[in-house]
Amino acid sequence: MARPLSNRALKGLGRTRYQSSGRVDWTRMKKAIPLAMLGAVAMAGALTILYELGLYLVMVVPILAASGSMFLMRNVVEYSHCRNQRVAMLIATIVGAIACLGYYQFRLAYESGWEALFRVDLLPRFIWDNWTTQVIVSLRHANRPPDDLSFIGNILLFFVEVLVIFGVGIAAGHAAASRVYSEDDACWTESYTRNVVLRWGLKIEVAIQTGLLPMILRQLELQPIPDPQNAPPHTRITLEYSGDGSSNEVYMTVISIPNRMIKIVSQLRLTPEEIDACRPLFLPYPPNAGGQPARSNES
Image 1 (cartoon, rainbow, N blue to C red):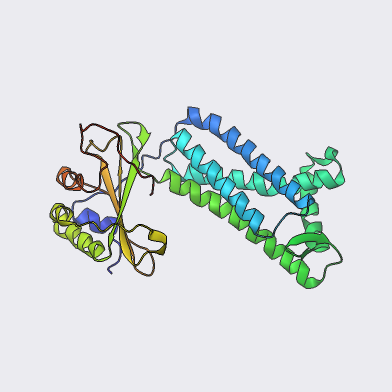
Image 2 (cartoon, one colour):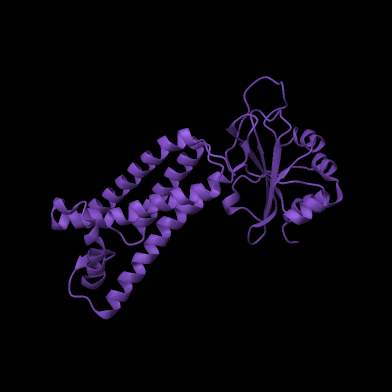
């Protein structure tokens, strides 16, 4: 399989990919940020409760916290119409910092007295004491004299958990802000995904380079794969469009999945002729037709 088509290659073919405007609805964002911060504080409180109850399972609980961070970021980005990846990643960093550091701050207050809840100056010392005075026993923290290996393990565990929570949140924010947004309709696009046999990935790649994509799409005989997670190698084709797909703003992403995912092209803007060729096979229903489309939010 050839390398994914780059922006330079597509430009040489006279084709364009989706380009985000980088805009943000700051009126909505000003409402979303405090709610995201409250959500991060709630996650920190939940982590503290689990720790004090002896239910803080190493790596399991941080993964659950990372899932919460992902949920928050996807909703913040979608609600605020944030098309700026840097802004989304910055907010995810703030949310992650509140969740991670807030967990230790709550523990500090619980163990030292609630008057220490806002004593941020005590936090570095408290974290250091955790590294030097605690070990992992039966997949949870427990107080007992540590050894050098426990000290190193605590430091490594701390940074791994931080990376998990930060990494998942930042990745979720970036991915959500990278979705196609219709500036004309002022809304995020819908997506529709179909799986076809593997060989069509290469055919579509060649068709894009030779200008024969409409013909290939008309010839495409779909062979749906019921369960992509356990399926044999296949090609995944995703269309992103606004409204009911009747507009001329439609983008295609093609990913081949032999042994690993190979993105052939990402968010390629289709021509009107290519959109017409896609309608019978991919778009939920033709324009001006009755009924509601069966949409898929895979992306």
